[in-house]
Image 1 (tube, helix red, strand yellow):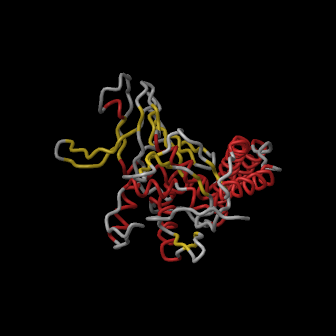
Image 2 (image 1 turned 120 degrees about the vertical axis):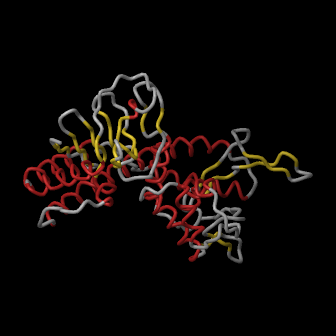
Length: 348
């Protein structure tokens, strides 16, 4: 297949060979992989940037300072999966060679498999899904949008059963007795919602997590059966997801597109077909990634339950990030919901 000449100035992870084709720079590629990995592990763009600066790692432009906008562009750049989006910018003044961002004034063309990938497509898709999820973690009943935070493992997963708001971490000083507690936002700021939620000590939350996980370990057969049912549900829901025939047709159209682009021929007549097919494939791929990720979470929890021979005695933040989706606080108990779909009620 013919390859398009892609600009790579200030483009971390790639250089060009003698023929002008993009080739991977191994050392820089590891930096790109690290950024994707840390983002999926829950790091904010700020924290990723701070970590790179602390390690003395330079940007693609050779600068020591990392901006969140740089991290954002790397996480969204389709070139890292081997694809190329043409005409992101266009020339407005050929004499002065002035280029501006393309906001739909001229057509854009997408080519898959144009060069060697650094990031696997399924990882890239997971990152795109996470980017969307973090824009608005939760919309409150009063319409206020809560943005993503990674300051603590419990951030934004503690939910009020009374009003539906999130709980916030507070340093509490009650008559000289200092502690860390979690309180419903409705009791901390005007949300327009009446709430009677109780305040929960952070040490109690840690204990609730241990009790819930040990409940799974104490009744292995019951929860293993539930997980098997969850697997069956996920598989049934994804039965309609298919990319049969799409890839083959896309490859044919893309070869034609590249040929015409390199020859400076008009290629508008095939652009619409490519966009329509790619949107269909993108949705199918996203559905597949979500299904596979859910199945992986379920099977990992199955293995954890099966292999853990004794109760957990020490709270571990990594377990919260790995397994927990949400903890709902009710007047007399808490509901711990895992990412695998299991729910455990804890009287606390």
